[in-house]
Image (cartoon, rainbow, N blue to C red; front, side, top):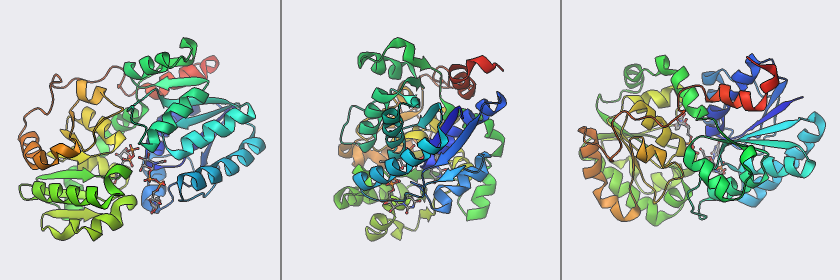
Length: 364
Ligand code: UD1
Ligand code: UDP
C-alpha cells in the first residue's frame, strides 16, 4: 500500500478529507487509520459523516490518558499496524499526540513520513502541540507547509529545501468545498438561538486546566454576554471546569454540546464575532471574514493576523474582552490587515497540490 493516513483528533479529520479525496482521484492505494484519540460521537463519527471520509480501515481505540500513557498506547498500536500494513508513506496531520506518535513510530520502522501542516511555530514550548510540531517536522521526509512563515521556520531549523513544499491549507479546501452547506439560520432555528450572537470555543490546557484561568475566562465571557449573546459548544476537556465555575449561569450564555463540522462552521459564519483558542478556527474565520479574538499570548498561525481577521488577547487584556468584542461585532477592524485579504494558496486546491507532491507520477 502506498499511503496510510493517520487521524485521531477532531482537527485531523478536517485536514485529511481533501488529501484523501485528491489521492483517491489519482487512484492511489491508500488506507485511513483512526487512532481513537477522540472517540465521542460528536468529536469523531460526525466528522466522517459530514466530510464524506471513508470508514477508517482500522481504529486503535487508544482513548484518553496522560501524554506519556496516550503516546505509548498510540505507538504500540501504530507499530503493529505499520508492520502489518507496510505502507510506503505514512501521512500525518497537524500537531496532536497521534501525529507525533505516528511520525516517531514510522521513522523507527524506516517508513517515509509526510507531514501536512508542517513548520507552524508558536515558539511556546509550554504548549504540548509545539513539542509535537518540532519533533514531527524533524522526523518528516516531506514537509507540507500552509504558509511562507512555516517554510522559513523549517529552513531555519536546517531542514533541506527539497523536503519542504509550500502547498497551502487543506483545512480551507474543506471549508470552501462545503460553503453551500453552512446554513446559520437553520442552525439557529434548530437550537433556539438569537439572531445576533458571538460564537465561543475554548479548549487549550493553558485556558481550561487551571481553575484560576477558568475563573478569569468565565468573568470575561459573562462580561461579553452582558452586551451580546454568547453561544459556546463546549469541548469535553473544559466541560467540568466551566460547569464548576458557573459559565452557564448567565442568561445570555448558551452552552451546547460539541457541534459537528457543518453545524459548527454554520455557527461561526452567522456570528458577529468569534472568541476562541482553537488553531483551526483562527484560519476558518479568516476565510469567512468573521472577526476572531484569540485568547492566547501567541499564535503559530500569524498569517491569520497579517492577512486575516484575527487578534490575540492575552490574559492581561482579558478585562478588555467585552469592549473588543463589541467593537469587532460593530464592524471595526480587529487588526491592520487589509479587508478581504486571503493568505496565499488558501484557495481550496491544497489537497491537489499535496497529491502532486506525494503522487506525481499518477497525474490528474
Ligand atoms: C487534542 C490535542 C489538541 C487539539 C485538540 C482538538 C494533543 C496533545 N492535544 O486536545 O492539540 O487542539 O485535541 O480538539 O493531542 N475527551 C472526551 N471525549 C473525546 C475526546 C476527549 O471526553 O472524544 C476528554 C477526555 O477527558 C480527555 C480530554 O478530553 O482526557 C482531553 O483529550 P485529549 O485528546 O487528550 O486532548 P484534547 O484536549 O482533546
Ligand atoms: N469544530 C467543530 N465543532 C466544534 C468546534 C470546532 O466542528 O464544536 C471544528 C472547527 O471548525 C475546525 C476544527 O474543529 O475545523 C478545529 O478543531 P479544534 O478547535 O478542536 O482543534 P485545534 O484546531 O485547536 O487543534
